[in-house]
Amino acid sequence: MEQTIRQRIEALRKVMEEEGVQAFIVPSTDPHMSEYVAPHWQAREWISGFTGSAGTVVVTMDKAGLWTDSRYFLQAAEQLEGTDICLYKEMLPETPDIPTFLSRELKPHDAIGIDATVFSTQEALTLTEKLAGASISVKCIADPFAYIWHDRPAIPEASAKVYPLCYAGKSCADKLADIRRKMQENGVQVLLLSALDEIAWTLNLRGDDVHCNPVVVSYLVITEKEAHYFINPKKLPREVTEHLAGYAIALHPYEAITGFLSRLQGQTVGLQPGQTNYALSTALGATTCTIREIPSPVALLKAVRNEQEIAGIHAAMQRDGVALVRFLMWLEQAVQSGETEMSIDRKLHELRAAQPLYMGESFDTIAGYGAHGAIVHYEATPETDTALLPRGFLLLDSGAQYLDGTTDITRTIALGPLTDDERLDYTLVLKGHIALASAVFPEGTRGAQLDVLARMPMWQHRANYLHGTGHGVGHFLNVHEGPQSIRMNENPVALQPGMVTSNEPGIYRAGSHGVRTENLLLTVPAGEGMFGRYLRFETLTLCPICTRGIIKEMLTTDEIAWLNSYHQMVYERLSPSLNEQECAWLAKATHKLHLD
Image (cartoon, rainbow, N blue to C red):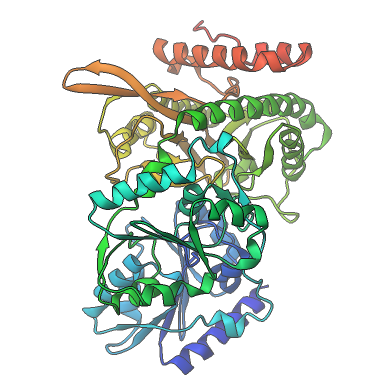
């Protein structure tokens, strides 16, 4: 494999030489700036062998590097071994960012190549500005992988599907009306949408184009009175065509988007530069239109769930919880019978698939036993698959797509005796999880203002984690969505009632163990108070939290009360759907915790 990676990099360098560029940047995205992409656009994985969802490869004539975040440090180090690609760990003080690296490696008047269709407008302009000081230019060149990736998968052609109103809770007509009101508030006459989840939500469509993400490869342009949908005609069965015709949505071939935009004249076009590829904004820039950079109005409209969606996610969580209880019961015996990371993944899938409205997993399950739990986005392979033993931790991060909601849950499960360090880390993570779940905060609070709650118990013990504490979760859509987040980085979007966000602090000890506890939270009103209204979180996820790793003396009375209350809710919600044996197991798993 290492030799193949070197050959691929050399093939890219030949294209670079022909194009007159001294470096080329390969991002992880597609033309829609997606986090997870269809195989056709997995060029960064193909050129490097690194399979994580986030990372950027930079190739010069004599060096190659991969930049990725802390979730993938261990995974990337393993997968890059022997490839001559250096790992650059983002957010560490000694790591140069990509423009700084290129400024050091290249000479004045050198050029860097990018494929404008997979580079966001924001990133392209920022890169150009930062390199200008070193007299290095950025050149847009045609996709080089079209020439060197000979067995490249085709762009997906799977059919789109209508998402029923009984699950969506709001019609396409009502959503378009809401979007147009936001367009008017922002002073734009045309809105360009590239994000696949935003388009799927707007049109009440779903698809199978991206693994675990039920979206459809397409573009949408909304004007004051019209909507234009750009999609491969092969993806449009009669049901979808009739659905779109009912809302007077004009259909165009997927590749016609650039030509359509280049013919617009004299209008104010709204777009989000971080979600719009540079090729599209360049096409608009050649017209007489005025480009107005605005946050996508769809992102916030989509993130605030309507009543039907909230009812749906509650129902999905109940069914997911039933599957998880049955899995955890099975797991207790499986530890004694030689089960492995991969086999328990298959068992969990089997139990979820038996639930009504199950449509698939919301992401590939992370089942990391022992030291593998420290690899934040670990995925077992036949080469790494490890047998479970009756000791230490299993970190299990998984989720499902149901027609009425998307789930995402992490449990760290004690399989037997634990070390003092494992118990300490487990307790600190639980304390952080409870602190965030218990938060009450004034309306207008941003996620960055709450992030410290989850980290403070760890900071007091000089521990930390570098990933975010919480991300938005879609509704039978992408498991990661915005615009809200809970993380150290500043995000101007305030939390609002109806938003679903994860709560997932963790601690990871390389070579030893990893701990993460994750539930999904719904932001709800908490009543009036000084200077206005207050909000709080309602925990949606229904699954016992393992108590065997807790150092009880480290928990406060309030923390124990929260855990007992949560477990009581889990039992009350799930027990009506369980048999007598399952109820007995759940009663034991959710028994009240008392300080001795």
